[in-house]
Length: 178
Image (cartoon, rainbow, N blue to C red; front, side):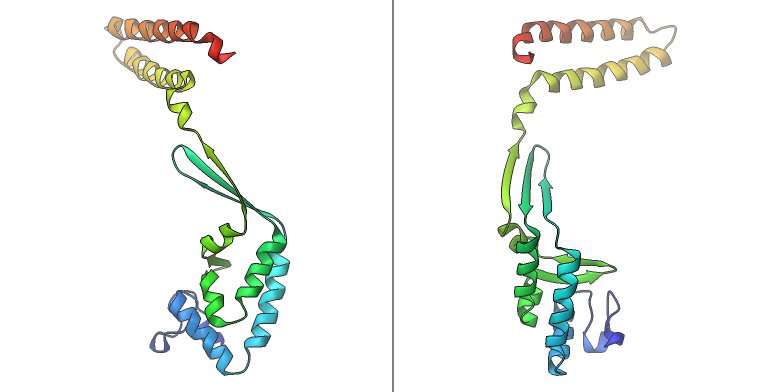
């Protein structure tokens, strides 16, 4: 079996290896055909229980949204052990091996977790976002102020205007900030 355990291509002519779902399925079927699949399942179960027994937190985010999935270690190991009952079940959750990493189908894993959805769209219109944008503009003006010395009065005025504008906006929104 060792000749099939290289990460990417495995044995090219036989299309058996660890680097893709079809190659992995072929490898598992070869193990099964040699009467060794129950031994493989036991060893895989031992690995899973040792490595994945702790609870997991999976974070999936985009620009302004975030999903947290809290997964009990026992539920996760039970899922992996259950799916390893057959080669087809195995590859439904395990896609491939890469080095010391096992690549998995996250959908089935996320299904067993408790999901918390966080939406940060409200920050787009919040004064804090305006302060951040103002700070970025002031930084650019400050760099130009230093680089254009001594003809830098324009940038000095822009810096003061930005500071005055944001301070006025803070003053008018102070009750929302406290």
